[in-house]
Length: 107
Image (tube, rainbow, N blue to C red; front, side, top):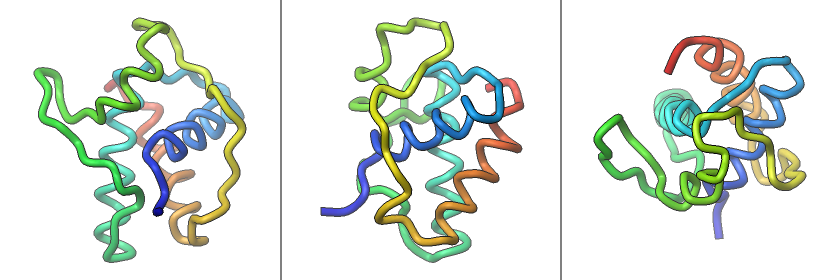
């Protein structure tokens, strides 16, 4: 079994929390999309195994969205402690860069 999107989401939320800026569920979906895309470009493989669906306001992973929907439009907090275990050093750097650069932009 590969890395799940919910685990990557929690890692990204932890990174954002450490950097001191909030991420909404809507914004989290965009960050997951970018991180998956960068993984394809720089590592020639998927970062996580879950598939996106085309939703009205952009790509979404239903399982991740449902997990954090109780927050509504408020900032989402990680719901579990997840380490970088299972991710390559390149993937770890990709996640940090996506959160740092894209995470600061309006979704």
